[in-house]
Figure 1 (cartoon, helix red, strand yellow):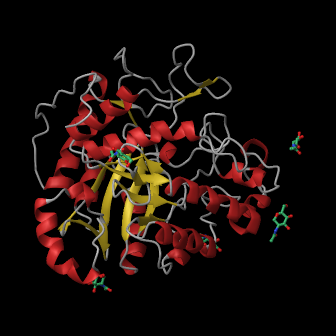
Figure 2 (cartoon, protein in one colour; figure 1 turned 45 degrees about the vertical axis):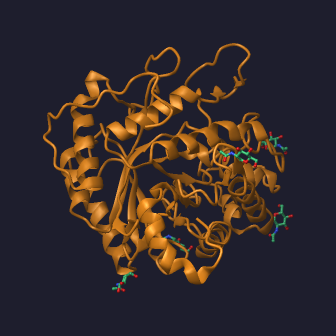
Length: 401
Ligand SMILES: *[C@@H]1O[C@H](CO)[C@@H](O)[C@H](O)[C@H]1NC(C)=O
Ligand SMILES: *[C@@H]1O[C@H](CO)[C@@H](O)[C@H](O)[C@H]1NC(C)=O
Ligand SMILES: *[C@@H]1O[C@H](CO)[C@@H](O)[C@H](O)[C@H]1NC(C)=O
Ligand SMILES: *[C@@H]1O[C@H](CO)[C@@H](O)[C@H](O)[C@H]1NC(C)=O
Ligand SMILES: *[C@@H]1O[C@H](CO)[C@@H](O)[C@H](O)[C@H]1NC(C)=O
């Protein structure tokens, strides 16, 4: 919301917001907590990585499809249904890679260096609009550490003159040029500018101005040449943070380094630090929290395997979720990962990583109950019983609540 005269803000803000639309308010940070409309707000939901571009469904003949990576745009109904599922689960938000990571293939936002594919915005615009309609917020990574179908840091390296790929070069020290080479950094910043200044025709708002996207994250699981080395230069995180705050002063900024790097704690642009838990680990969570709270910042468990405890896990799903509930500096969590039905056929979409949760799939029922209990506890302070009936979600789902 923009007020014509700043000095009237204190007079107008309260009544306008009290009777206005909470969707127009930004999520803000105070110390290690997040606030919405003056009240504590928790970011709980799922990773739904495919909202901007998918790799799991072969579209009907004639629809855009890039066979080499099986990339296609999700149908609108599929995106809408997942919003209804998040609501049914008691979630408040979604973390979605492909609303920000879209480089390097013909269906991407930036298929090749400097080229913009306007058609790729349609699926992103729709997802942002549907999230808004369902009062769901979005946390969006801006690139990826890897070279998957949706693109990542290697695209910017290649476009900046470094012929590197994940297959050959994941451990090549030259990958650090993504953070240190001025040409590469400029290319990445140019991409961010194109993304954030795009006007969504469903809202007439830029992504920068739309509070539905409450946070941008530097990237997904960013590392240096050694797996989980946390070697993401402070200067780079700060420079990307300054750009986000310049373009979108009300967005929260997430450090997408894989793990909490102690030397990043003083970066003033960072609101939220994050880690991914494969397997879930309360001891890692506690260690991360002691760092983050020392800086009076907040923490987000951006990914965790909901159905795979693993040999080194130190908790089961229930005790992991309870630990998060009793840790005030954890602003929330998103499990990996949620799929729904395709539309119009309304069959489940399958994804073969062993970590796919499908709402309504009887074999996931116990974990769905735990996750829903947790989301409602976090978002509303509501305790529900473990066998509370799950709300029905129709397929197709309506395009607004
Ligand atoms: C943390 O930040 C909050 C909100 O800005 C502030 O009120 C509080 O004093 C800070 N705590 C510490 C220990 O700096
Ligand atoms: C960045 O990389 C390009 C391509 O390899 C090179 O020409 C340029 O000198 C590098 N710039 C800096 C500042 O290192
Ligand atoms: C990039 O490197 C690969 C492997 O060394 C090579 O096959 C390919 O031709 C190179 N591409 C360019 C554009 O230089
Ligand atoms: C966006 O702006 C255009 C041009 O002013 C207008 O025709 C359209 O109705 C607006 N759409 C929304 C959703 O406000
Ligand atoms: C943390 O970041 C610093 C500064 O970029 C870097 O030198 C270091 O390797 C990183 N990793 C760890 C574990 O501190």
